[in-house]
Length: 211
Image 1 (cartoon, rainbow, N blue to C red):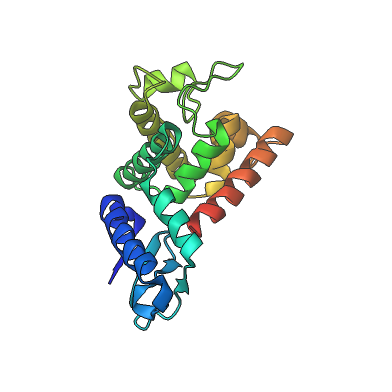
Image 2 (spheres, rainbow, N blue to C red):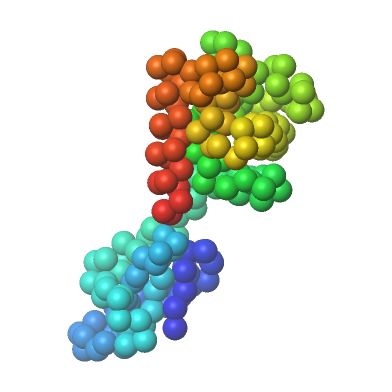
């Protein structure tokens, strides 16, 4: 029997039941009364009382079991819920615009650090730091609305990829420095900011691809 954090309420119920049984039968130290835990490849925490079926599980001590129950009972913070909502929006927006979600997420990370209210000194706004002119071009009425901003930014990024024949390096450079600058220099413009930006987004993308 196992469960994961993706089903938080059932996980709490399962952990509570098994912890209760384990602690009640602690003097007998029987294997069937223990909890075993595993972090899977998706980052989910899974629990079982049948470790023979899942050999990579680690047995929880009585103290660890109590701590696990305490953590599983906590409600997610507003900040974590907000980040989860943005992550889901990014994934959906990427699919709708035929983009790699890891690439789109990396751009959002580099542009605004996932802050929907971000505003640059140059006037770029929101998650994908859209300039007012760009936002207007893509029909974004409220650049601080995550859904509108992501949609406009994703469409802009997709169009840049098309214009540069799928070359992500050039598309990213154009996203940062402008399409005209990339064409004028025949590649990544010799701007330190743009070069660092392209490298950072590519590094972030590799990180998100591995998650």
